[in-house]
Image 1 (tube, chains in turn green, cyan, orange, yellow):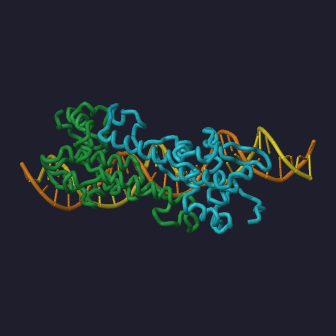
Image 2 (tube, chains in turn cyan, blue, orange, purple):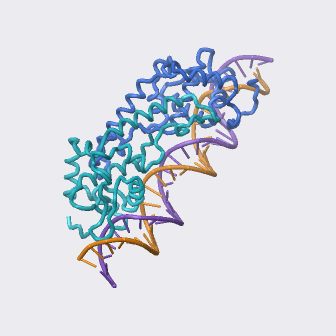
Image 3 (cartoon, protein in one colour):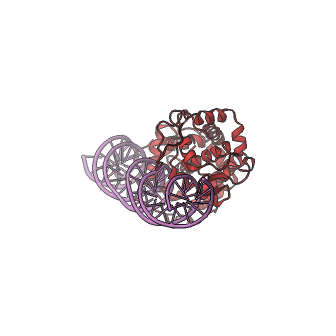
Length: 163
Length: 163
DNA sequence: TACATTGCCGAGTAAATTAGTCAAGAATTC
DNA sequence: GAATTCTTGACTAATTTACTCGGCAATGTA
């Protein structure tokens, strides 16, 4: 399993979406501001999330993104896989041609590890994350705007969000 | 836990060392040839492994590397940590300042995952890997030279190894 | 003592990836 | 028709990876 900031950003953004779910679509600008992620970068990530039906979008004023299905049916592994495409730790990507068309010495080790990481992350849903102790507190702090100091706002123009 | 080819190379090389242990030091040139890793790159990795006392070296003709301690006392996590320095999946490296000096929304998730991966890899020794079913077969194939076709030999000059 | 062998070290580098920016356009609502 | 929001694609700076290259240091053997 490749674990990069790309995947982290995606999971964080999806969790933000899950937390603010219910009151209509959420704009990427909001997520960008709350989570301190560049808007343009989020756009790229959400393009991939949308292809996998993990989110659905509404255009126009009042538009934004909503979860593609309920939070309990979206798993962390799916989110990471959507943005990282490459989801294993082997050199060969599951094939056995890591070295000169043969299996390398440590192939099985990485294969096992990949499976374990995947299984772990594939059992944690966004709903599970929401229920965790720390998450609600952090979310509330973010809504109060306490964490929007040094955020890179990208091409965000109006700060009409009040706050 | 950062899992890159760098760490994979290191573990593979260490396992090669463990397999060929007992008959005096092993040269990096041998490992490079058997495992299809660039010699100069191996030198860099082994410099770090040596700093952590995972290997010890002997200079001069007949010299090379030996394991720093017995194979059952060297764990995969230690090898990866030695070459990758950065051994966690959080953005902040265990501190809680992932976002504007505050903890980001998914901090705990990555922290948990890091711990799990670490625990898993920290319980697997080189000896364990040697005992695995596939490893011996692959090692034998490599010793017969079956896998030295398209290897990049780096600055290896003489092929006096006689195959 | 010469020299061949091996490790040791630091600088440099091409390719890939990450983490973005920028600009234009399409759908939708007011 | 104007503002808002998603959609798409091209481009780019910084970083990391996976090396290469060259020279020096230690050591064994002739």
